[in-house]
Image 1: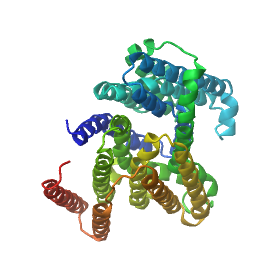
Image 2: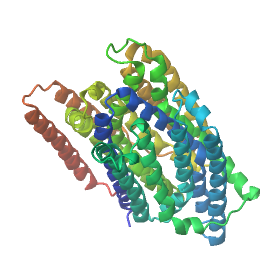
Image 3: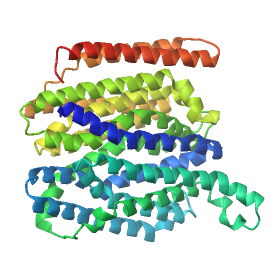
Image 4: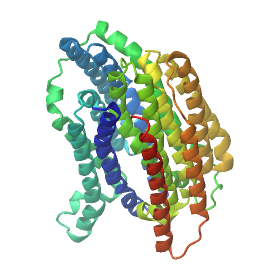
Length: 498
């Protein structure tokens, strides 16, 4: 099969779980923004899940990528491949057990330190969520390596569906039971509030190990330093890269509350502003859907095609089509931002930061470009460069937010994010061309991007009433742009094989 088509097929399958999963999770955004009328409550959810995002990286410490690398090295030795799986799983399991145990034992103190005294139970639930996420990280990597995208999709979606249903049960049905049925009133605790969001997540996560039981029982615990040491040496820079990536993606959610002047937004406290920004940030996740689906399929794809003589040309084509898809997402979301805001952010106060979403989408697009560019140091075992790039990016992000948030608020976060990924992409491209030259052709991408920005600008300037007619016009603009891109690319493909 054509490798590009194979990658597209795998990406589509992973995209089903990613996109449908996100759509289901997005069903929670209107629910949460409707139930939690105090934006500060949504700000607390945003902040706590930001800490979870950082800790998820620490818990797996780059061993997923190390697993792909060493499986590719020993692909013709089944016993060695099995040993790599055992070593990777054992190390992640033990580290996760120790970390979650420490967090659970100190839950009350950690809750107080974070500014949520009396919520030690939530901290314990988050510790369990982190442990279950880490426990299935290597089995999921094995599924990806074995091209079992369907099983991957089913397990992911099952957990997400259960989590969404439990959110509906805890936040909509239980309060009604509490008010209407005195006998069953004991089931609901009004004071738990946002705790039900994390409890639903905990229960949803718990079914994943049950669905992957064959892969868990297939593990033979192996504390083998000889096998683990080279994997850890390879993985450690990936860990730093991951933490740098989390800084670049999430640090503003931690800094906004502290750096935003108290009266910057007259009708909001900094904590409420964080809740508004967190809700609008969700709309930029549409770009992250494509990136996440691509990463699931891309890592094993790049490693499996590394020895192909035409790999550089192949990777250049992958970059072109990835950027093309990302630009279409940028246009689709930005042009229809008002409609999406009304659909997903049910409470009007949460729409105050919608204007930053197009800029966040540009930042995510640049992040996707960077992810593509990183292939060179993963294939040449020069992952230390990834560490350096991540530290530089984190410095740009933190410095940018510290300087810009007090003066630009939400917009400062978006500008800092764009600057970070632009710097990282340029540096990574420069060194990549020295050590693993890939013939990228960015000229078409720049032209498409210029056309996309022009279209978004025109859509923002259109003043059409009523709202329904304006929405129909915007959708037609997106469809026209997509059709134009398709016709251009179709014409190009007549002369160039994919």
